[in-house]
Length: 323
Image (cartoon, rainbow, N blue to C red):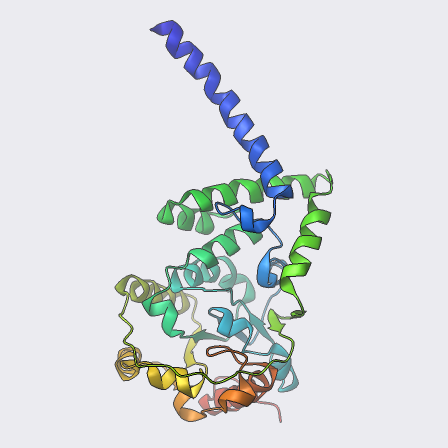
């Protein structure tokens, strides 16, 4: 029995080492569609570039947080022209579980005067946040807040991504370039297509227009776990003395009107007694002209929406708008 245990104890380190070697090779050279259980750094949607820039960003006026509707809808260039220094920390499919991680990681450093939360219906109702969790773990440096999220999900994909991101970071820091980075850049450049990263975290998509389609009525069910995470995010802002604004950026009118319980969501959000601007009611936009799909603004829509939001923020008296 003792001999058996000894063999097991000797075998475990070898197994762990081989797993790391396999993970490194698999992660470095296998196309993403075959890597169902991990995500490599420098992946989709410019999260790597955004978080790289975030690490050196300090003393801003506004910080935007939310999902893809945030980094594709809040154009930092529009706010810069208005005289605001902003940063967009949106990530794809971000829920308030990931928002909390990003706030704890970057809020003290960025020191914004105002945090703007984009309130996607999906973030509160049907999205579990796994896509955004993988994206953050793959592309940010390892820190305790991200690790807490990994253990909270307790999913093999996140553990693999955490390990591979650490290996990849080590290789780069020690200038051990064995063409992994070059391979991945070529691979992900194809996947990013015509998207363009804009300083400050915004992503501009090649101009496309939405083709209308019929949408039947449906009801979205609240996920109380996400509301709990949202309230923790509000607590983080309060503890740091930062003002908060809640924003629902526009959906196509066809999609928004199809959500049967949208007024219930508004009532729930209004109960927090914070500035809440639902731009689906304030400024309904033309579906065909201002969107590229049912839930995302195209560049025309993003420009109109960002300009209107800048003016509305000025009306709060928190920041001075420069005309």
